[in-house]
Amino acid sequence: MSSKTKFTSKLGVIAATVGSAVGLGTVWRFPNEVQSNGGSAFLITYVICVLLMGIPVMLAEFSLGRGSRADSVNAFRKLTPNTKWWFVGALAVLVSYLILGFYIVVSGWTLEYLWLSLSGDLFAGINGDTNSVENFTAVMKDAMLSGWKPIFWTALMLLLNLWILIRGVEKGIEKMANTLMPILFLILVIFCAFSLSLPNSMEGVEYFLKPDFSKIDINVIVSAVGQAFFSLSLGMGILITYSAYYPKSTKLTRTSFTVSGLVLMIALLVGLIIFPAIKSLGINGQTQGVALIFVTLPEMFMQMPAPTLWAVLFFFLLVVAALTSTVSLGEVNIAFISEWLKCSRKKAALIVILPLFVFNAVCSLSLGPWEHIRIIGMTIFDALDYFTSNIMLPIVAIFVCIYVGHKLPKSYLYNEMTNYGKMKSLLMPAVLFAIRFIAPILIATVLVSKIIEVL
Image 1: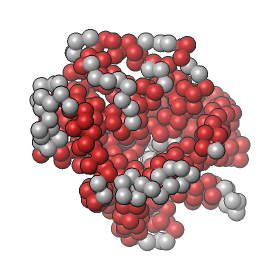
Image 2 (image 1 turned 90 degrees about the vertical axis):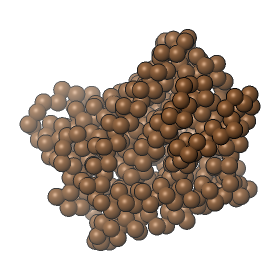
Image 3 (image 1 turned 30 degrees about the horizontal axis):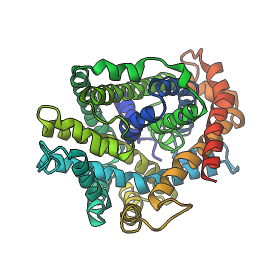
Image 4 (image 1 turned 180 degrees about the vertical axis):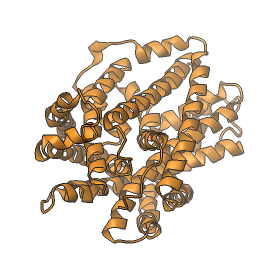
C-alpha cells in the first residue's frame, strides 16, 4: 500500500468512515431490531454496547491500520512478522467479500425501488386502493424474486461500485463520501421533521425513547451487540483498511467517538422517522424485515402529500447508504489484492468485482428460482447473511481484541492513541481494559448464542 495513498482532509476521514458504517445496517436493520426487541429497551442496550464494546474495538482496528499503513492482512504481518496472526486479517478479507455476495443484491433492490419511485410505477394503480398492502407486497416479490430483474439491478450497482473504486481513495471514495454523506443527513432531517409534525407522533417517540429497563434480557443484549457490530463495521477489515489512509495527525480517539456519535445520531433520526409515522398513520407496527422498508413505508408515503417525492427521497437515501457500505467492503479486498499481486488498482478492482457478477446472481436466484437449494435449512442468501454476521464477524473481532490487548505491547496502543506522546489520553487504561476483557466477553456471548441457535 503506497504511503502516498491517504485521505486528504479531516472531513474525508470522518465522512468516509461514517459512510462505511452507515449502510443498510443502520437505516434498515436498526428499526427492525428496535421493533423486535422492546423499543427503547433495545436502544438503551445498543448505546451501552457501543460505549463498552464498539468504540474500544474500533480503536483497536484503527490502531492496526494507521500504525501499520497496510491492508488487513499485511497489517498483522508488519506488526508481528514470522507469526500466524495474519490469518485474522485474511479472515476479515474473506468475510467482507462474502458479505458483498449478498449485500449488493439488497443494494440492487434499493436501486430498483428508486427507479420505480422516479418512474411512478411504485404507486401505479394503487392510489386509493384499500388493498395497498397486498399490491405493495406483489411489487416487492416481483422486484426481488422474479429471477432476471434483481440480477439486472444488482449488476448496475456493481458497475457503480467498480467506477468509484477504480477512481481511487481520494478521487473515488473520499469524493463520494464528502458529497453523499451530507445529502444523507439532509434527507434524514427533512423526513424526521415531517414525521414529528404528524398527529399523535409523540406515541412513537415514547415507544422509541422512553426508558423501559424491564424489557432488557439476554436476547436484547445479544441483538444489541450484533447491531453494534453491523452499524460500526467491526470485524470486516474496513476500519483497518480505511485507517491505513488516515494522515498521521489524525486523532484516533476523537475520530472513534465522532464516528460512533454520528452513527448513533443517524440511528436516532431513523427511529424518529419510522416509529412516529407508523403510530400516527395507524400502519401495522408488527411488520418487520424486508417488508418494513418495501411494503410498510410505501404504504406510509401514500398517506403523505406528494407520495412520489417522499419515495424518491427515501429510496435515494437507501441507495446512498448501501453504496457507501459496498464501496468500503470492496476497498478491503482491493487493498489486499493490489498488495498481494503487486498489480495496479484498476486490475485489482476488476479481479474483485467481476466474479461478483456471478456470485451475486447465485445469491439473488437463491431467493427465487433456486429457493429450493438449502444450506442447513437456509437459502444460500440467508446462510451467507447468518454465518458472516453472526459467526465470522464475532470471531474476527475477538481475535483483534486478543491481538491488540494481549499480543502487542501496551505501548503500541498508547502510542497510537496519543500520536506518539503529542497528546494526552486519559481513556487509555479504560480502553485497554475494555479491549482485553469487556469486549471479548460481550462478543463471545453473541457468538455462543448464535452457534446454539443454528445447531
